[in-house]
Length: 224
Image 1 (cartoon, one colour):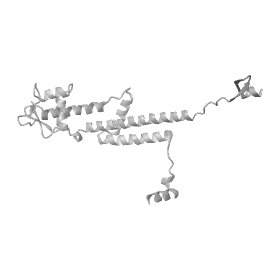
Image 2 (tube, one colour):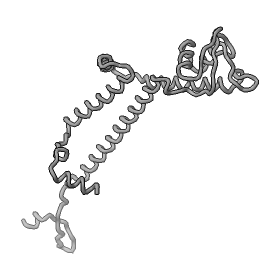
Image 3 (cartoon, one colour):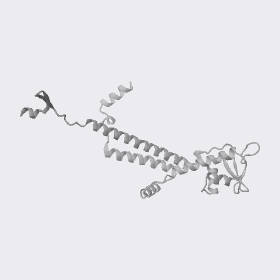
Image 4 (cartoon, one colour):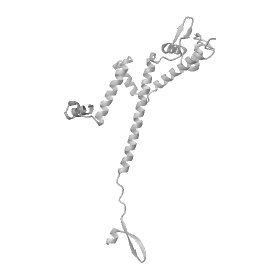
């Protein structure tokens, strides 16, 4: 039934059926505009105005290479997850019943600072504390202490930067896959073109027998 309706709609000469398709350069420009519109609308949800996006885009065009900030940020979140797991499971960060201890933030040995240096070297302890409190069940206490409540999972939805970084990684993977498929299609097209090229005409000749031996002579030589 659906096919009959579609066929009837196409044969009736409706506006939708008669709409011309774009191709070539016009198609590329239309697709790029669509992509920019989608990305622009998404970035507005993260608090970036159209003017800020324009400035950042201009800044990216002046760079010779794009810094892979998304990969570094996701790696930082992974390391924070390892930190929380160690705090949740391993001595001396757990008490006698196996629950995560309330730790001192600063200091040596079994402190949060020692965990931060181990899993996130080069990042200040204050930044690691802020990241943990923002993205996990972690909170600071009076007296320079910090506690882990409940589980040791990083709450990804709480980290908008992490969500954006993950989205960027997905987009990059999609584009890399598209480029790979495009190369395969071009290679296949080139091979097909080479196979269809006309081959040089094979030489045609006949054998003439004389004196008990055979010699191959061309047709032109025989006619002479």
